[in-house]
Length: 279
Image 1 (tube, rainbow, N blue to C red):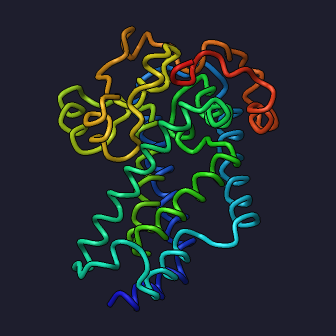
Image 2 (image 1 turned 180 degrees about the horizontal axis):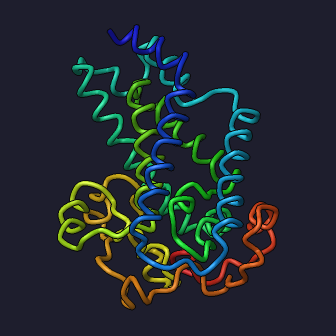
């Protein structure tokens, strides 16, 4: 069973991920049109062209600069019984679930690290300079950050022996929940309270995009909401409320720098401000 699954994933990984990406993007865009949470303050056309253009560049950079993907590494270590999970006779489904949870914890810790180390914050702050908050903010990451993140995931997959199915499921979940929890969508308060016990919601993650430093450095989770609660980085609501809060960074307020070329050079020419943890 796992061998057939591995062959299928190796052959169709890109198509599977692209299908889910386009499907979730379309659903979230339609939801934002029907029930927006906040009015947008800048040109949606310019932002969407820039943010989705970054996705194309990120994908191209990964294909050109990394010789292996997380899935190919997972298949390699599984065939040779390498990694921690392969040292135990775990049922296949258990290893898949543990692999997804393990990768999610790593991405949470990576996110904290990119806020704590000034050199890494330079790359990550491009994500936070968006002056609005919608589904495309969830895929707005600098190509260098994407490459570093993939390198971290590959190392964890090799060390832990995470299965290829777990890797693909995690990538789909991470991409999908990132677009969901960055959505400019209205959720009834009662529904949000229950849902955020299971997954990071837009109401929870929007706090992370506040200009207020203590709020920026909270709610780091993308997928599972548990790590913020367990590790003391959870913040329930922004101090100003969701309607009045300001999105972005206090030292980056120029909408003219939302274009794609500016986003690519931004980490190398803009100041980091006082946002890195401990600064």
